[in-house]
Length: 388
Length: 125
Image (cartoon, rainbow over all chains, first blue to last red; front, side, top):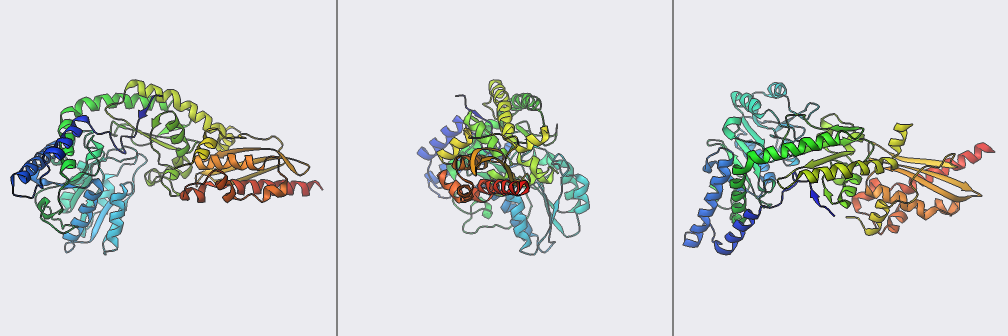
């Protein structure tokens, strides 16, 4: 049976060259980068090469990158670290309703420390409005954290315009760029952000590694304590093989991004066009301002998990914002924030493309999916009502 | 996540469909929660001669609907009333804990269909 992986928004396969670099690191360069001997120095050299590669991918300086255990830790470190460091200046934080839970939950936790939180709504495409950010800023605002692109619907936010407003106001601007780095060109100076979260396993690197870009001069209190690593901002012995893998993935991505964008953009367009020929299917997210790997549709009268299970039986891996895949009763907070009804949101399907996908993969999905939808609709009392 | 039996009933659901002029129809759940189950009964001489279902929901919702219909076909109304959601889940070899609450409503739908059948019987008297 053909196997088609279309869940690259969740994680990507590790690039063979990344695996090779990691294995070499583990076998031949196991020294602790903090040690002064030659074994340690070899490790330190690899660490700094990886840092330079990651920095280069986003137009940063190496000393502005600190490694973390992933995007979630980078987000948490930003939110707690900046808020606590600037507590004397103000206590107001702004975010959006469609952020990843790594941001939303951390921001909610901040309120227990006495911080005030504003959660901005989004438009029908899942985009944060610049004017809403402007209206929410107040003298006490110290931090604004808005994601670059949404992980579920792929909509790209106007971060450059938002950052200009925030900086002019004197607050700190963070963006969670886990879904954009390696998908579209991302430059911290062009965007004008102070902090940016990155994740290795979204760009064909290993899991459990991420990075936080911190613009020079940005105040940030460490969240963990116990060592001087990563400029005392993230203590603990570095995950060297993981970081080396991340660095290799960043190096490859910097070289291959233009070609990948073109390839995935074409596949995405074909997939969207094909899906929209199925009756009662709606594209979620912005029609043009979206990352090239993301397709998200609502398929009315079917439920997301059933769809995923049947696709899986045909070898196709996707994801859904359906409640039944998350263990909660509510479907995706992103789709609900965009104004979708619970019923429609339950029938969402996210297909996220990667470098190894082919036109044949897309045609296979477009052949299989309508049959599955028809089968599930035949079973659905909602569809029977619609027909009646 | 799901047992082989759940997957079997999900992929090959038994008794899908509607019964015209059903003796009783029961529906539970709502689209907001992501699960709707509708069960149709054909009852003769107090025995469930036929049963069909339509379900909008997750894998567990479809599998429990299918299993519930299997368990009560040919049973008397009183026997069918004894069916519980727990028994349906057990017949499937168990369900993940998070699915017990929202997906295993099949016995409830059946009980509503029986109540509808009984109400119709009363009306006919």
